[in-house]
Structures are given as C-alpha cells and as structure tokens.
Image (cartoon, rainbow, N blue to C red; front, side, top):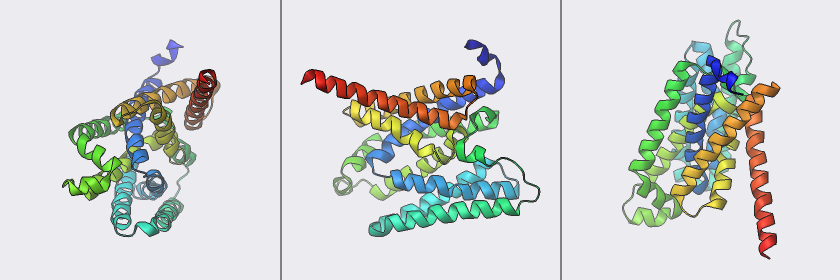
Length: 271
C-alpha cells in the first residue's frame, strides 16, 4: 500500500485530500447548523460559470471559479437577507444561469477538448503545487475566521434574533459564511467535483451532529470524518481504477450507513 506514496501525483492527491476535506468538514458544519445547504448548493453549481470563463479567457481555473462563486455568494446573501420568502426561486435562478454561462463560454472556446467531467466529478490525481498552495491558504483562512469569531458564529447559528439584539452583526456573519462556503466549494471541485461537493460537506457533518453536543466538537469531528472518507476513497479509487470523486462520496455514504446501523443496534440492545 505504501508504494503509491512514491509517486508525486499521489503525494499531491493525499495532501489535497487532507486540506480540502478538513476545510469542507468545518464549513459543512457551519452551513448545516445555519440551514444554508441549499444556498451552498446553488453557489457550487453556479461556479461552473467561472470555470467556463477561466477556460475562455485563459485564466487559472481556481481564479475564475473563485471570482464567480464569491460573486454569486454576495448576490445570494444580498437577495436572501431582504426576500427570504423567495429564496428557493432565486437560488434556482443563480444555479441555472451560472451553469448555462459556463457551458456557453466553453462552447465559444476554440479548439477546447479537455474532458469537462473532471470539473463535474473531480480530478484529485491532477492536483498541482499551485492548487495545494491555494487549498492551504484557504484552510488557514477558515481556521483563523472560526477561531477569531467563534462566539459570534455560535450565537448567529443557534439564535440569530438574540445575536442581533446583543449587537452582533448577523448580516456580516451570514455573508462571510456564504463567501467561505463559496471558496470551499471551489477547492473541493478539484477533489470531488461540483456535482458531489455538497455531499462531502454534509455527510460527515450529519454523522458528527448526531454524535456530539457542541458546535466546536461537531466542527472538529466533521473535519476528521471528511478527511478519513477522502483518504479511504482515494485509496479505493487508485487500486480499483475508479473515479476518485464518486468513490470518496460512496465511502462517506457507507460510513453514514455503518453509523446508522450501529446506532440502531445500540438502541435495540438498550431496549
């Protein structure tokens, strides 16, 4: 098993899995407790517009996707804060328009033949050193933000009205969480693709939420579980020549099934 670590591309893939999975676990916990999963899904799919623009203009993929995803996050935050009753319609609009823009830009790119499936379902084995630097900086940013404003995030996550009465800038926290979600989605595209990214951010969080009693331990456990699922899925994909993104998500789903089974057996034994 250890012989695969002699390959540079596997070393990069493992490091990318560690960085992105822990970031996804942390942000996944925050979007779940703040009921932002659908919003993050809209941002994930709209970021395809940034991928298409990056391909057309010759930009780095992360730059184009980040630019578009952060713009979509700010737009969603501004709209949903004012018209919460129309949130679903607006997210659906951003989702569809973003993907349509990406498809059109790719169509307009002369001679572009790269397999777009890698952006939809991930290409962790193709991670470069520049990608790793971007992932590392994002994880540091997330860790700093959560540590620095943990009390504010905790207050807004569980009672935003009370947090507002206490003088906490709930709108700023809400917007910041969406922006961090957008950036996490962008880096996770390289690992599992934009189609499966929300699963990576929610399955470990669901397990952690049912196993812990505080937001801090939920964040920590979610990050560790996401990392475990990614590494195990990566090894399976390598040895059985499977698509890495899909294998990682199926590994996470198997982990969820095992967790549910253990809880069911434990409950039956106690009764």
